[in-house]
Structure formats: C-alpha cells, structure tokens
Length: 110
Image 1 (cartoon, rainbow, N blue to C red):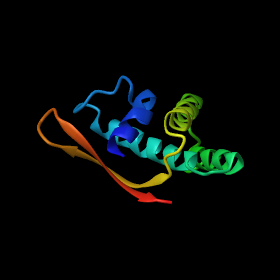
Image 2 (image 1 turned 90 degrees about the vertical axis):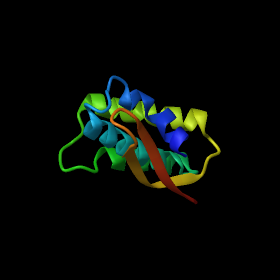
Image 3 (image 1 turned 90 degrees about the horizontal axis):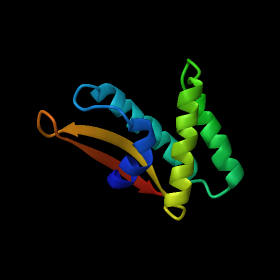
C-alpha cells in the first residue's frame, strides 16, 4: 500500500523537495490517503459524496487548485487500482537518513 499511495499521490507531491518541504510532503500524503479512502466505495454516488466530504474536512475551504489535485488523485486511484478495497488507516513518513525517506502505510481490508 505504501507504493500505491506514493503512486496516486504523485500529482499532489509534484515539485515538493525532501527534506526541505517535509511537512508539506507529509500533508500531501495524508490528503491523498483521505482521497484514496473516498475512492474505495463501491457505489459511484458514495465515492463522490466521500470525495466532497474530503474537500470540506478542514475549517478553511480548500483552494481551487488543491481541489483540482484531489480530483486528479481520485481519478488516478480509480483508473489504476479499481479492484483494490483496502482503506488507509495511517500514514507515516519516516526519515531514514538526512535525505532518504520511507512511506509506511497501515491499511485495512473493507
């Protein structure tokens, strides 16, 4: 699931540099994980409602460009992994060395 998350999150993480933008990278992974979870519902209607809820989950509305990135990640998840039904429960960005990071994902079958 770590590789899956890194793959679908790519549009959201594009241009971010580690270790300089570690917090932004981590936030992008967390948002992509929430979008992934929205994409796993079997019903198209429920998927769309869940994605809308992700876009509204903060106190401050997401900027349009971030909403557009959420849509890209959502479509990427649906097109590349249509049969994957695991949800992401937790994401951890682990620093292994000064410039090397690893993504750990805790997932659950639904």
